[in-house]
Amino acid sequence: MGRNNLTRPSEFILLGLSSRPEDQKPLFVVFLPIYLITVIGNLLIILAIRSDTRLQTPMYFFLSILSFVDICYVTVIIPKMLVNFLSETKAISYGECLTQMYFFIAFGNTDSYLLAAMAIDRYVAICNPFHYITIMNHRCCVLLLVLSFCIPHLHSLLHILLTNQLIFCASNVIHHFFCDDQPVLKLSCSSHFVKEITVMTEGLAVIMTPFSCIIVSYLRIFITVLKIPSAAGKRKAFSTCGSHLTVVTLFYGSISYVYFQPLSNYTVKDRIATIIYTILTPMLNPFIYSLRNKDMKQGLTKLMHGVKCQ
Image 1 (tube, one colour):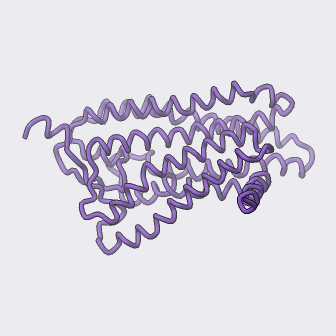
Image 2: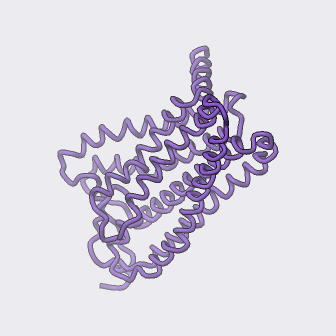
């Protein structure tokens, strides 16, 4: 077998959530509505924010971008998964696999940076309310947005370049429903040392930076809220953070379960946990933000009323 065959498999086989033929159509029936609900729900959030002048604030600006990224995020994964549910081969080409992995890592990390930007926005609004307009100005929002896209995409590009250097000479069956980094890495028979060092240094820094921003922001918020004398004032302050905290907990909780463990321990349970942050969290975000936020409820109601009147 030549080196080219070792380093460049023509395709991988995505095992999916189940290898049993009788499970494929029921899974298709389950995940197609989930995808449609996710796309429609996040699109409604974007349209509601764009159409309501009361929602033209930094917080909702970042929320609209988060909804857009969530649509892209699930579109990277679910359509191919739906096709494979109805396909006999479940194959994905080598190039398509790396492309899917690139955008999955990029959009996933963009989500975390946008959540950090939203945490910073809440920190400024609660801890420095009189300087909010000055600090969270247009220039600051654009800078946070540029960082939220540039850093994850550069991080993702580095991972793909390192993955492309690996030698694959064993099975080409990926025990997952998409080309995630760890399941693909398990198929390699070459040394993972450089990749693992990169993950533990550059990767950890990229991941921990937004998480640290969120933790520090909410610690400062918590300290500030405790100083508010009235219980009503405390509830009002915390209510503006409730939706964001719920999304952060879902997102980082499932990611921590999957990725903060040795590569050899990656099992079927991790595939199920991956569904939470790759599929369920983007689907639940519109509901969390609309049900727990009075302004978003009013914005969605206004949007629906406008559609009915046309």
